[in-house]
Length: 499
Image (tube, rainbow, N blue to C red; front, side):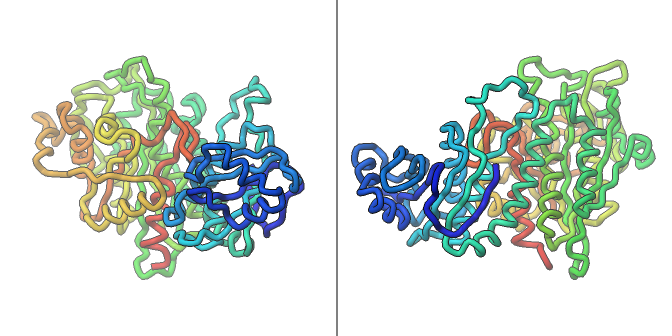
């Protein structure tokens, strides 16, 4: 769907969306339109339950006095609650509301919200941003979809006084959306299309944006001593890969050390020899969600020319059962030299992350290190599908990530890393084992990762419950969510750019 921002004018066709605050208070454009239509909008509201609350819509078809096919009253809610997230949600809901109406074009009039938290340009930019985020659709494999089932909307134009300023505010948001869409595409692809080699190939497309991309094959991984990563991938016909993406946007910064982002990239997870139940196993195509987020983040940073140095490292493997697969009871040696007794081959994400975390620290000496992974089902038991789990060895880092998540609508909740839990992963045969008992599974997984962290501020974000959604949200259609791209982009923009 095409998004445009223009100066105000009444449309000559299509749908026109105007705002209504709570308690049926018309926006400036809505007031003018009500007069032009002889009070049609006021009459329509008086005979309905529409109050102007967020998520409410009221359609007025072909009103006299305007050339629009329909006028849509959209609830803005209370003015004091109208912030960036509310504006984005409004844009997304407009797209969802009008996508099945048959209208191919919609014009959204954005007026100043007195008492709101945004200026006019920011309001318009965020409405456009929310509309673009919601317009995402993964339909490349649908060959027989009926025309009436396809979204009809092809173009959305935001009308606002001072369109040039609004377009400037929208441009970086549009670039972030590019990164979000790239991640959603990668996570949505089936495992016969996306596997270590092809996912690495997708990461290499970022070179066109100025990102330096390296791909390490299994021979190089063996030379580096990455026994943990290699062990996970040894049961598959698709060999593992490690991908390194570097964006140097702040070469003159006082501290040139990059920010480090690590992504778990299990392109399909059967559980290996500790095989998963058949029901729902098809969902394991998105067990590479963490790596998808890191790729999308690097794309967003490069697209908007972020003034920061960042490195993304993704560990890619397919976890399959076969005659060559890793067995429960095997002991592997990680790149760090630490040995790991593999009790359960379905706890494979922490193994690939262990080598990726160590590699990033050893080679790049990052000033901060953050990993993302669909790591544990236990985090879903703890937090459901609303929050990601956050673990960190640094209070300031944790607080910054929490604030960034709240600001963009990708919330995280900090979980403990208490030493008392660490004894659960002590092994009688090796330095550690890869699982404890059923208790505190997300915590023991994070403590496992912490054993591969040197003296660096580090955070682990468990996105198992939020990487994929089975229901629509205002700016996130069901499917791959790309949870983490916007969170980390905001975190970087607020605390590291240009420093």
